[in-house]
Image (cartoon, rainbow, N blue to C red; front, side, top):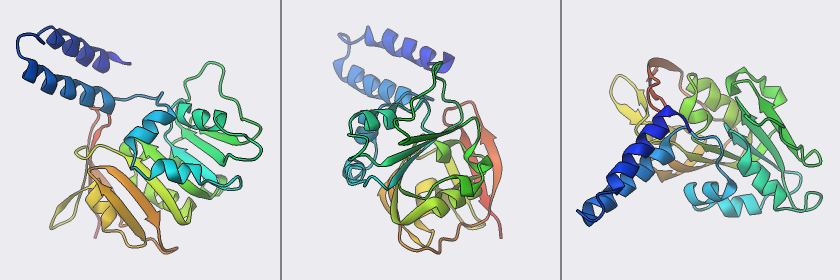
Length: 243
């Protein structure tokens, strides 16, 4: 879980001893602890957590995936979510193809390719993978993944939207306060920034988003990373829109 998570967990357990002294305070404290732990770096989320945490349309979109269509999980850690999906399907008839992009798989014995239904890219950042190696996808997910950690947001977005089919969807779970994009006139959250991009339709708020590609022409503004603070997980990043 990491030293940061263990420290927070210890504090949460200590405060839990005060339940009888102030029940209302305990409820607020419990919610705070859950929020901190949920947002911490974690690589083993299962499909149930994706369904619960992502935009409410995700489960329907996943279940509609045809056998010839592709789901890409961006920064999917140990691949528990994609594995849960493949295990739940008849691989020959009902499951879509799945691509897992993870910098560190972190599994001693690797992961099955599920009769060639699963392709894994590991040990490379998304922006270091040649675009032509990544298949076109109908569905993508990013649960505290690439878009929460990349230091080259412009290039990552260009790759993602290049490999997304027209009318394809991306489901994002990110921190609302850990990414800022600035121009000369304003400061935007990641959600607000994405809603300004033509060629995509953005639904949702505060980092829990459903993005649909509605045009082949999607133009991402040129961005420069101007601040990075890695003490938190995900890190705090500030980008500037270049003129």
